[in-house]
Length: 581
Image 1: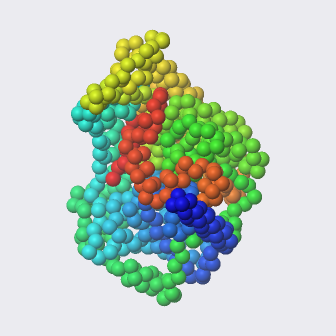
Image 2: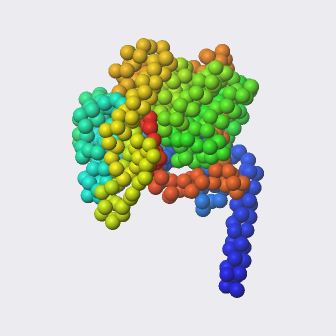
Image 3: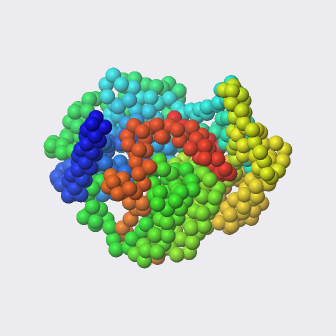
């Protein structure tokens, strides 16, 4: 009887939940574009991650609030605000941003474009770090809350090493790689940076720090020498930040809006959030044309995946069969006149990368194509970009990393500590090459070296062909070394430095669309809703889209590409996940 009642109660709860989803979804579908009042102020309250790919939409308020704002959304919103006569000013309010420096360069460039429209851009900061402040320097005035501080003190890179811990556990990780800089796995086999890692990261830090200094100097009308000297004095209390000219005023938020009100001639401040304004159709402002350009977004690690696993969240990564299906869909659409493929990936599995590379080259033969690199397009992410088409990267994009790596754990010591034994029966000399109960051995290591060297040679060859250079020219630039976009441009690994604006300009040129003609950007994959879960499409990725769980997934992703590592096999992946802060 008790089980029967529990079953009835469970059924009622599930039915109610489904009805709730349907009701809220229906309400969202019926939503009209927001009414933008004349004299409105757009509030850019950016926080946390700003993904390339739209996250799953939750129409139920307590499951996620407003829709996630993507990089393309910010680009579109600021273009609209620049020409929208109803928008009189923009307030930037970034907080706890979790984005790379390439995305920051895109966002800051968008803000600079807005400034050219002549509309006031104010920045209001709460406990800002270097990333938030970097964006704020595009504003004409920067405000900081009282009794707060500006956490601006330079930059650092930290790598974590687990060898000592693994030794205590009795775990040995064996790594084979092609390229002296392809040191993926060092965190498991070393206790400190290799000379090669130190060389690369010092060059990365010098470039990014120099860009930060020059950007602050330009925005705050100071010399680079002054900014470097100030950076050594940070972090700054609010009063200190104002005293050194790093911010314009120390004020509460209402006082900042009072200043803006005066700037606008005393008119009442009417706020509209970025989450609302993103739903204003670009066509209503004359920003869209008849010609349609596809923006295909690939974000995350590259793995093998079935076509039905379309990946509803950005955490699902680039699944090869799903991404190939997407590229074919774009290629077969006669209404699409050109394609920008936007890549934000540290790489991944060899076979998956190769499948996508093949389809990218087929798409290139069908449509004018341009590659736009985001925070990272390295290793497998760089590999799939080798179509011979123009590549646009940011100065802060992590790219290159042309190399191959294989890793295998030997858990024999851990099993011994736990009292576990394994006994194997073999047929075939190397049947146990991937066993977790024994090391590789000379024969196994030789076999892997042959495979890795073959794949590495093919990788360098594809780069040489796509970049129209000789193998001997490219190979010294490979070796698994990570380059920033600015360094890659100097070495001919990318064509131009820029963002979405430049990518669309180039694809219009290739498609023979006049530079002054408006285009309509169609994003792939499109936004999806909770109905995709209800209808059984990609449900495995829904958990990763829920706020809270996404933070955990993001943390795991940053520990050396753990998700890719655990799946095993030969990989084209960045040697480390770099976060400069």
